[in-house]
Structures are given as C-alpha cells and as structure tokens.
Image 1 (cartoon, one colour):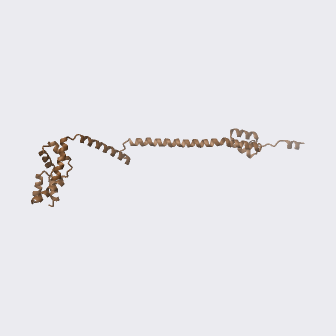
Image 2: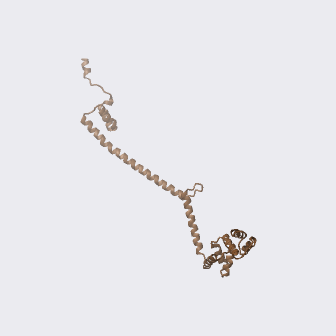
Image 3: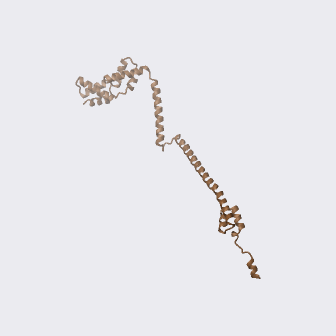
Length: 223
C-alpha cells in the first residue's frame, strides 16, 4: 500500500525547470525564459513557436534602433570634432607664435607685409610733385645720352632750373648704378684722350664720383 502511494505522488523537479519559473523569466528576463522553455519543453510546440516569434518581433526594432542611434552618435561626434578642429585652426591663425610659426602663417605675414609696403609706396607716389616727376624724366633722358655721377646729375638738373629738392629726388630714384656710370665715363674719356690711371681717377672724382666709384670705373675701363 505504501509503495502504491509513493508511485502515485508527483515527481518533484528543480524550481528552474518548473513552469511558473519559466513564465516569470519570460516576463522579466525574456532570453533566459525562452531558453528554459525550449530546453525543458515547457508548453506545447505551438505555444513555444508563438512565444519565440514574439521574442524575435520585439528584438528586431531594438537592435536596429540601437544601430541607428549609434550612427547618429557617431555622426554627432564627427561633427563635434570637425567643429572643434575649425575653432582651433581659427585660433591658431589669429595667434602669433614666434618659435613655432608654420609655413602657412609665414606666408600670411609675408602677404600682409607686402600689402602694407604696397600701400606705403602708393601713398608716397601720390605725394610726388609734378616737378619731381619731370626731373625724374629728365634724368632718364640725360643718362641715356651720357654718363653722370650722382652729384653731377643733380647739378645738371639744377642747371635745367629744377629745384635742389626735385633734382635730388630724381638722382635718388633714377635707378642708376653709379659704379657702372663711372666705368662708362672712364671709357668716354679714354676714347677722347689718353690718361694715366691716377689722372683718370682724379678726372672722375672731379665729375662727382666717389673714390671707390672712380677706382671701379678705371679698373673696368682696363687700368
């Protein structure tokens, strides 16, 4: 009799194999509950398939939504980095760094300096008087005909009734190479007459050339 009662008693199973525990996990921890449902074959096949399909249906939006959010976050991060880089670049371009100046910064400074020099040159040119312009033109004419020293050209222009200021301006800005002018003058004298080296130097100094210019001219002429 006792053996018959023992046989009729339901077999005890661990709690994790029980139906109520599987349902609890399906509600609060779906993946584990789904695993236990299939592992211990809780419920019939149709119920298991329906529950599994529901699980897949719920997880797909979550997965794709997370991917989308990750993409938005990545794009936001890239935008933030790009913005930060642009701000940093702007700060570098407007800051003077004496010891670590880049090529781009040196170019910018050079361009600014050139612009400033051009502006000053234009302002200076605007202040040139009519007399100075004419004196400069006359100086070019004289230099194309004969050789002159700096002081000799000033005197010639003053002889033409230009003021000392106008004549000096023309001599300073005519672009003449006074050493070459001394050499031309020395050759002119030698084509007319014979000179010793010292006498030719003295003649060039008489024409207003400096000692160095006269010596250069005589040497260039063959002495």
